[in-house]
Length: 257
Image (tube, rainbow, N blue to C red):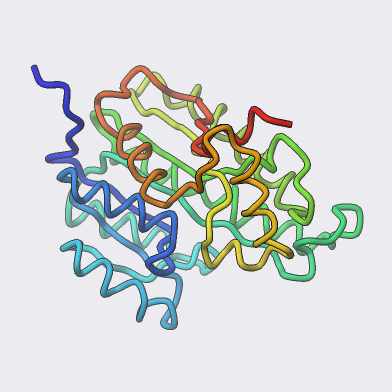
């Protein structure tokens, strides 16, 4: 038996590609390179012009609009997966959102509506996707979502996304316990700061990026491909004994004060 990582024969759903700088794209590119067949979603018509060419270059047989806030979109996506594939081996959830006025300010000052929206898009959409994916993972599978160090430590300017990501990490653990008997593994990845479109909404992000590289023991920036290789390992059979973990990929930044 070889020791290489292979995703040959596996079918996966990737939610969260916005453009070629997206963490989700870094993961999808590596997964495709290791043999996986992917279904890819985009948020809306504007995002389609960026996402569709990337998905087509990866020969994705399913490319579909999916706004988790729009009634029926998520269910329609999984109905198509069931019709076309009849099964699903892994799910990658890489979406998060908070209204600009509630991001970067004090958690104390956050609006109830902004906090609720951030929780729904960033956390409960993972729960909804997991519930829909569960019956398609008839022979086990893996579900991965994206967190951030701000879930465990206070990161300046991260605002309500800190508590929101903390909730997401807790959800990972609960889902891992609830689905473990079916051979379904649930994990969270916690990348270091990355130059993505989502990160551009965080005030003073360039400073945060520089400080993270200086602080990290390896003193190197993290790339979307770094996250992708780890995600690919975690959805592969080589990680079959791992579930409930929050795995850091941040050049060691999280261990340094």
